[in-house]
Image (cartoon, rainbow, N blue to C red; front, side, top):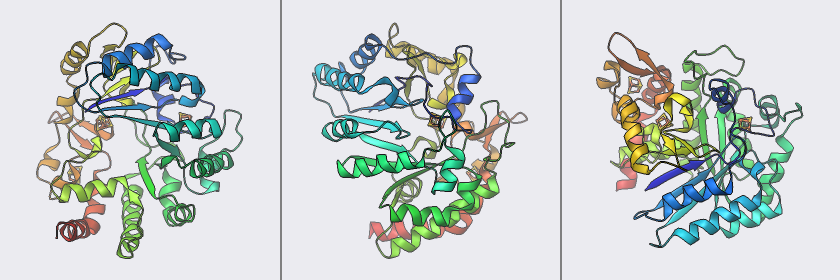
Length: 369
Ligand code: SF4
Ligand code: SF4
Ligand code: SF4
């Protein structure tokens, strides 16, 4: 499967969340934003990706806030997918949004074109509004709830994406019950990223390994209790752990042990190996001028995937290695003595697996029966 993520509005956004990892990346590169993607660049990406595809293609749109580019752009994107799909491969579209601009027209479009939406919500109203606000500082929670209700009404498929900050971690019980009351069955929890400079903590929302470990255990306990009643939500990380216990390859790249091959396109067509590394030093090429082959060679030259294989001695001899696999490369710290990397959240994973590993294998065993 070829997986392309595009940023049609670069890092432009109508919100200003304190912890925004993309704002941090933009602040650490020479050119902060690349404006809006032109239709010519969109066409170059689609043509290169779809025309010669022999296997399924996964397209994702993200930001910044991708709705800022306007609905017509995405209608054009779908038209191009159809135009170039001569071999009739499966094409899936995903779209991550803060929900502010979502209205009936967007919902109709998402529904009719089978888009899978990721809607960003950070817990209950008070927590969400303390972290996720508009450029002018006004709260955003009510707009997000309105977007979710509209998507329900138009039968749009969506997941809830929650950034795990200190306040989310400390209030996961309330958040879990709130999500349940909203009928949000598909959930993904993403640990709040520290700065790309590699420094940890320092902000009120920063997540420590201990907090993250306790968060994972509490969330798992709540989920496991619901699993016994067969009314558990789909929580991506847990589903992947169970998949691993069943001998399957996890679909989440941060649970594979090795970074996956991805192409992330900025608005000017420049391409990077991952959303978490959109820096000049990591540029693979540009969709407007370079072939996939050239961009793949550049990824090799940069050693991006190879670096994710350099896991620490602790990981190699760890009793949880099969399930854990060392986590996301972006969350690993360099260990100069051994030229390897260890995840900042290692202590969190150890706490979690110590309490929950047996239940993960028990669930897998029940499934395989
Ligand atoms: S909505 Fe997303 S892109 Fe916009 S500021 Fe918040 S985290 Fe960043
Ligand atoms: S750095 Fe993390 S998110 Fe990026 S490809 Fe690697 S595992 Fe995936
Ligand atoms: S728990 Fe820690 S040592 Fe074990 S595999 Fe995970 S990151 Fe490595």
